[in-house]
Length: 163
Ligand code: PNS
View 1 (cartoon, rainbow, N blue to C red):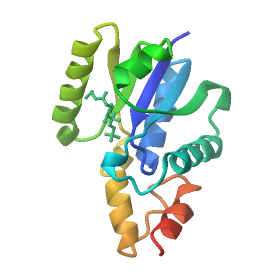
View 2: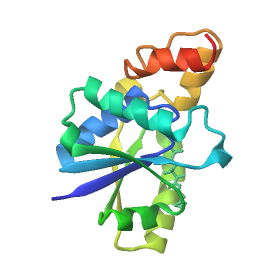
View 3: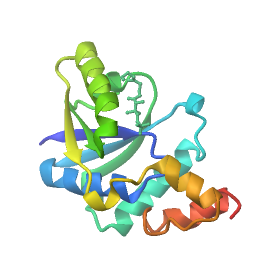
View 4: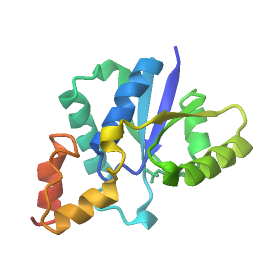
């Protein structure tokens, strides 16, 4: 059984993340969505809120909940991967702009633990431009992102931003 760790800030989860998760479930038996617990990134949502939204989104997208675990981690990602007896990190790639950052992270993680492999899945082209930060900015400015985030997320985003 191959388990992949899908790490990220998920502040909040978007349809881009959900599409990577859906594709990841074609390739892997189990996916652990690992939410970064790091206040220095000044997230809008607490770790608990982000985990709840991911869990609700997994149900909403009809994924098998037995194959998706949602957890949080702090410290080095490779140490977390090892603690879960996993060897695969799953990341999504959108445009070329993601490539350099992802290449740097994948190589740093390989340097830290060469038994861990990073696997990339191309984002669905419908969500190439979707990013959590843009969804927050657009909502804050009164725009509608309800088609860009999972159904349970849109009202929470509006409420959090007082819209
Ligand atoms: O969704 P993001 O913010 O692009 O995810 C970034 C994440 C969480 C994958 C990355 O910041 C991370 O792995 N942080 C843990 C710290 C770590 O292991 N750093 C060294 C590897 S670059």
